[in-house]
Length: 339
Image (cartoon, rainbow, N blue to C red; front, side, top):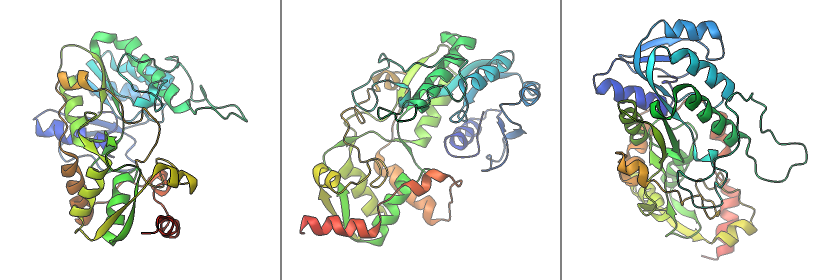
């Protein structure tokens, strides 16, 4: 495990241990706690000596990489080269941001990826001053990291998982926890867009299980790790939040147009609300055919609320503060609705 102390990495390590696997977890040891039973190896992936020390703890059947979100492709490339000597397979957790068309158009695994060389540094793809187009820096970095792993391991020994939104216990981004806290306060609550809009968040434990299945597989491939398109709606999500927290919030739905007129920031002020045509149109049938199973969204909501109320706290992360609309702004929009 590269990572293992935060959210998805912790879920992967926990699941692997429950399967009876021997698990080594490599991270800097600065935040989050690895599950009991895992063998920690502390080090920095950007330091060659630390990578060599990690390799000396092998060999392994597979590497599962959940900690490369802020690494340049060339750092992923260097790590893969060292680990290729001691690990048979590599499962790399990427993102749907690696696609050129996200979030504006429907996607399959055959959709075009962004450019991003396997040896790119952290500055590759940064926006020039005055740029007003799409911000593809993060996606280019992730696409480059995918190519870095595949360059070393080859397509037959590499599995690339491209999740969209991951929710569940230990979430540190703050999307689902914000909705749960808001519904727990009760009262008239602003609900964004059309209730029937389909959404595709996936439970962290389901991504972890699929990653481990891929680690044990005999072939590679790229897979969109999202829930099926028709599995859940925005109404399903918010209704589940209301039920999980006691049923005291009243959902008041506001149209996309009204929210845009009030300059509500998409994706963050009302988490998971976004009007782009492709944001929730990601095909995952290939992953489902390979064994991906997505639990009901209501189960994810209920389990996250249980984790929160039982004292669970996420790893501190700056993205948490990005999420949520202010009470004052919410009241103003509700007043504009006139009901």
